[in-house]
Image (tube, rainbow, N blue to C red):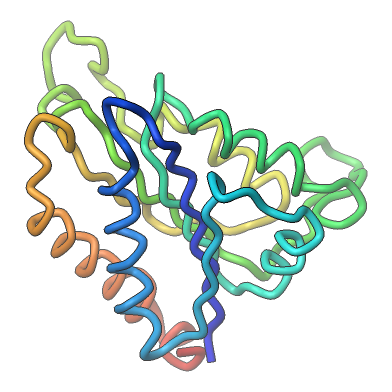
Length: 192
């Protein structure tokens, strides 16, 4: 049976208390639990470093669910990476920089929520012109790839503060999970 760890990196903020990200976590847990063993970490509830390291070593796939703050991860999720990703356990020295990751048998998926509307990525002469959400989150991808994990296609929900459209985004998220986790390949079908 596939083993999935979902890490919710949402923080409680006045403008966004984290309910949307928690609802996306719950959708993933509900959908995946019928075909996978699922564990959850909520970074804002605090964590024990060794326990988190064991969860990551246990998992086949890690889903990072988080809101994008200032074009990056929330500070508590960055601290989680700093605390949990240990030299000698997740990565080591390599002949070529960036090729010393030990977690090569693991996959990861970013599921992000944005205050920006999706149209912001297509405005001519706009802030995000010629940029994708994954481009803006390159440091998060490099972090996971540095420890050896293989990237799955990311998911993003947009305009979630002004027009949350919770039902729409939850349906899109379910479809994404079905396509990329439950039916992504014959190998993943065999695992699940």
